[in-house]
Image 1 (tube, rainbow over the protein chains, first blue to last red):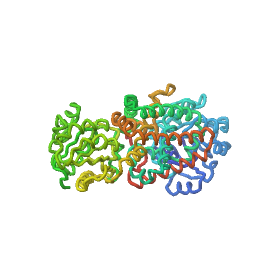
Image 2 (cartoon, each protein chain N blue to C red):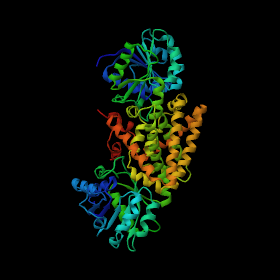
Image 3 (cartoon, rainbow over the protein chains, first blue to last red):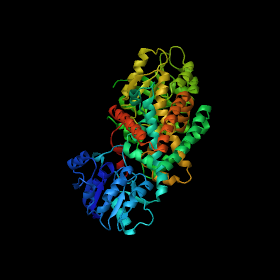
Image 4 (cartoon, chains in turn yellow, brown):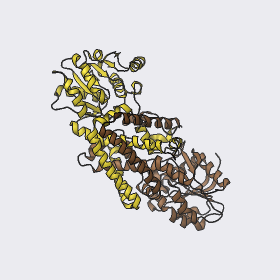
Length: 306
Length: 306
């Protein structure tokens, strides 16, 4: 694999940025990778574990001379970070991000990008329930989608270069329009997360079932929800606040459907339930065939504790 | 491991029964295991893959002379199966089941159990999204809970023997009261399944997002929902129809909470969202510590396709 960018700057050093560093280093995609995190503790951790070739004490210092700057901070922090680095951005360089919401990032970052610098928003559809600089690993993006969401006409050469970086990290790359991206993600990620958070909250509130019972008897179903509901609170708060319209639309559809199934349970309409559950089963097959998940029974969880 | 029962009969040969057979055989817990499934095709499959020492063409034949009979059929089929085998049940033998709902099973099966036969309902908190005789494996119950739910005073010796069988298959055994069992499972399993089915249905319905997009871009979140929503439709239809009250109660609590979070999104109350998401994260840690799930990033899914 050949070097795609001489200098890459990662702003924000959580799960995604740390995974990017390990993947870039493993594939030799950059000459040097600098990093910055607002928290001094995070910077110290990064230095301790060798995350980034150079950890800087300011975003401006990390960005100085970089050919690619990737904003890996929560969506709510994009505006202030973009404002801070704008003056030192190198002419001809590219600014990208990894935010889960794209319209809001375009509105927050776009205005700060100076003439002659390419702004190409992106979103890797990869993650785990873990967060922080120590949670990253080089394989996170392998066989996962990376959506490039250019606002208007992005520079073809700059886009091709960013694509090469992500493909070098193992991702499949697609290009998508911002608003459509936000709707698709509201369906495949944002609303499911809110629902999982809610269900876990309900279990926690319940008086007649103790937390220890919930935890002890957390069979498949709730257990998967708790994994989703363990994701980074700040990141997810920002996702819902910045993808408000699409999330609320999908939530509306969800409650509408839920009430229909609830009514079927109340009235004992077994046929409706059976037909519904049979239909949803088909989507799962599609995902397995699309290679976006493993078909191993229960993710091999049956082996836990062996 | 020593033999716990000379003869075990498994009625219904799906994921749970087939896993029981492989686990019983691996640990040498029974002298002979007979099996019966209503579908001829299932019986043929069982014979082909060597599932059960003897596959019978009638439930009565499989039960004849058995020291333990385990009903592994959907909850809705328990009544008719119990009625069919009642006349041939061996005096002093034990009848148990693996149904996900216990009050309904007790009401369906209990009246058919003759004097001198022990009826000890049970529920293994283990499963995968796969079903059928070929989906079973010996490790399914290892480090998973088996809830014994005796109605009134069960015979101590008979209960101890059933406990020994399940512990021999690797399960941890607890005893629980039927109605409490149904409430706990409504929280940890039944309601989460209904919610997952609903979300997958919504995605399938959506006009502006194609199924192929949903499948392609199924990041963590929705992907886990599809796994849950791929579970056996007949089994789950029966679960909801027979655990109606508890499921509807928890669903009520769920929608109440969901509307509160929806309102926080609409009004932009980031603090409420952040606090909520931080609280739910704690439950996850409890489950990891309780050994009921793996802490491996994304269940090692990042390795998919490597």
